[in-house]
Length: 444
Image (tube, rainbow, N blue to C red):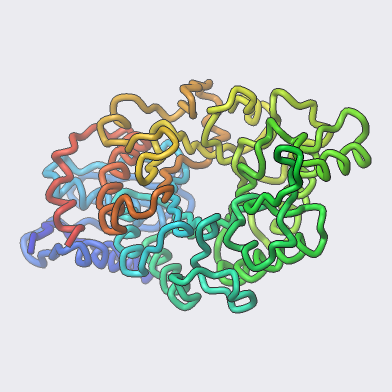
């Protein structure tokens, strides 16, 4: 077992709690803290501190932080400096939130594996774990109200509560993620009458992935699902409601009910997309009323080929992941409209199992060599001033081909991606070889 040759001194219960949490993390990764002939660092909470945390290297080294989370992040950095035999220093993150999203809807991950992922996130100062648990191919958290929508393999609500508590111990918040009104094939299997209808080769057929958002009973049912998980994730600040890939937004015309309803409600200039936007706006209002900040994906809003008669509410944040289609709005559109925009740059941060949809697996080296904090999907380099509207940068693990890798392989393979993102956010320059021994300990 490898030894860590620093320790912590604390004068308050809250600082003492942080010291214990830091030591717990490294012990769970196979390290042991020495108790003699070691450097002692005092952990001090200073609520009035102007920055998140700072380190004073003198006769009596001190790590100062404005709250427990910041104290934890700073202490982790100091332990890593010790392990890497670097000069002791801390570096402030240039982006407030560092998020990792994992698609557990299409691929099942056990509680044990998810906890292992949380440990690597904690090592690299990640702040949020986004659980994308509803997809076309699966729904993987127990529902007590609607068990018929849940896949054969799933996490129980008790397991999720345990995961949330485990995350909280390392100052990581969990973001629930249920995608609607698209990506609902699994949910709608039990309710085929609530599938949206479209015209294909002159025939009316069901779009098995899309909710009939003109059917109030269907809409109410989906909101019931959100309500159940709002209780389970009551401690979360954010709720991601998806709103991507509902339909082919360039072919709204093949959905005659949407087009007809839009014309009747929004006038001759309407295209049908307004009914979708109205659904999202209403859902944002309902989820916000439950106490959450709502996030949505970017691809369905402010389309360049539509004169939308109804715009997306400003009461949400944008997860900007792509502009693969020329009609998708540039990221500057959302910044200029005043939105907070999460950088989900799919060119660097999408780990898509099976390398489907034209993706290749991202690497530590690619992130190190090419990514900068103001670079968004499709090489959209924006002004530095927009970083003030960028609350988070996020990695995403998608299970497009679930069996391409085991759950353990996936979690192993994103370890170095987290290290690379952490370096970009803090401005730290290391080499991948620095992390090899840390990886070996963590993997055990």
